Image (cartoon, rainbow, N blue to C red; front, side, top):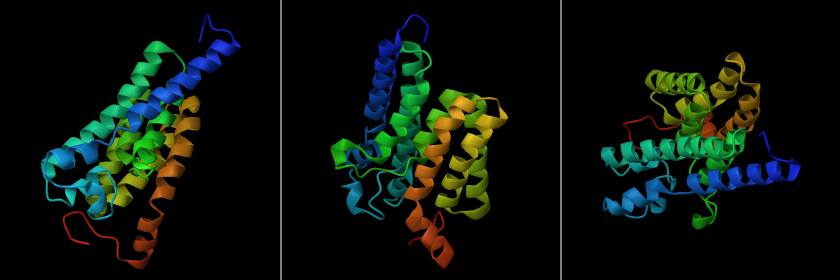
Length: 203
């Protein structure tokens, strides 16, 4: 970050993290479900505010909208931080995913970060985002299990960052991948028990 002293750089990085958090914490799934007449998403299915739970309302259009908006908010946070404070985009990415998973407006009970992590991955470097999308869709198609696709893509993102020569982004994506996997711990337990639901089938 040329032209900034140490204090200025630290302040810019902090602002990027806050900007990312604010963007990420917008609960689009909750908003769209209410606007679409599906009720309070937190009282449906898993109680999650992400696209997979929106799909459980039977509103495929709302689920698609949630997916796209959750992805877009992560990408927007990274792009805006890069434009305002070059070099701070990694902190914005971190803030965006954390904001989605732990939004202050919802008592820190948010989503699992899969779509928002895809958005920040794409904005950090499009090859990373491409790998994320291919792994996510590929594993979802192969298993028909949403959690497997999401966790696989999250783990693939820091590996892709290293492969494509972005170790600085890998250092951000790795802890975010761990966060996504940790938030799926109940899904992992159901996978081990053979009771994890498949897309298109009831719980």
